[in-house]
Image (cartoon, rainbow, N blue to C red; front, top):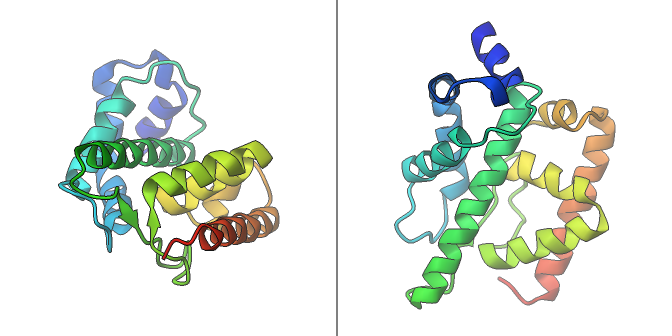
Length: 185
């Protein structure tokens, strides 16, 4: 694992093969996150393996970034998975085969009371929330898309766990309030 940490910390200067080895070493964790995220969704043809493979292709081609370690990498992977899901929802909507990706964030990270949300609506909500404070969006991506615990998110965001817990509650409440206000169910 120390090789992985070294490669992560020197990502920009590593070969594509070395970046690929790191992603391969973390593949199972990325796939678990993708599977948890795609559970209970209408997502067209998108499966956890294809979501991770698409994220892999995007991650391996990132050459200008300073990663601070495993959790920072997982946060980046979570953001990329969000982008892939939004792209897929737009494709589905454009094809008029569906009304976009539907997602229900469940489990310990988000809670079971979050309504089913159109992924494009969620992306719009996250963009609006980002204008208020970008840290809320980074935190949501870390928890909901990358599957991080409070402690892992705190490490990545360089905050105390208690601050992350407070900000997490605010982010969830804001998203839930604005989802409810828009009439999503």
